Length: 337
Image (cartoon, rainbow, N blue to C red; front, side, top):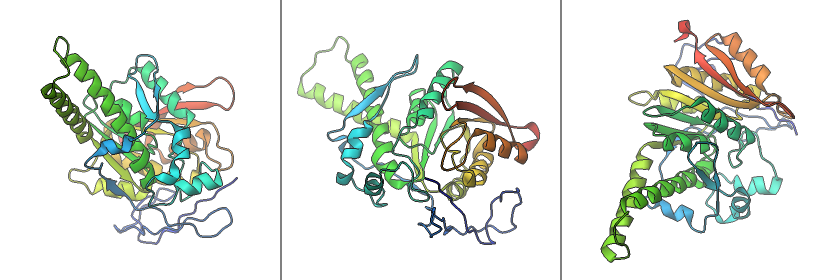
């Protein structure tokens, strides 16, 4: 299946176009009109907004079935089982109405409506392995998991003591039903570890001890969540929202996996890197060589980056068989920031 995603932006758009020109005004037409494969108008792109975890986030884990991923020396990462999640979509709150649509259409991508965030794509595992090999620690850094989906990349940076971790996905439902749930799952894991260490040599089972354990878990979870923020929406409006914060959001590390599948998104993605990456920061991009049906891939993206002249792009890893997968890193050229 092929898709096209055309942005009908007005002349008031304050963002770079494909040739890198910038308009002189500071307004964006947030009602850009994507077009589906039949040429009919699709839903308008989603305006960026921030989401806040519920006051009692543990209810998100009611009857949760989850998997645990362990790679080398990385801390274990927990995430909701994809098959079980799909089978329970009709029981979940979904203001965007994407859960039933993806189930009915059996599609991992509905252009301009749902951008694949409910699935853990294989390049995410590649990037985790590269991070383990490269020894990236994240300690004290501000991290953005861009196009986060299940949020495994951001969760890893949380567990490795990043100062702040922000999760961004196109769809609100993905953030509210999947990303936040996975973050909570991993909070619980950290709680258990802390609790075990703290209780060595102490008696257990008393009411006071149980109350103390519950408070410790709640306090630890709150501290964990205080380092997180969650944003939905398309990249252009997310970039505007991030740039409007006081102070402006800047990230030492941006992590993104399987987000360069559509060439129509390259200007917005590149602009987000350009405006939100800290001067000495870097961007990890995990991707396939080519995305059949939607047309993007590493070669086209690398060409786009070279033409813009803002970033250097270095190859860190490539698979040796099948449809090639890659991990690359972007850094500012010295004259570009």
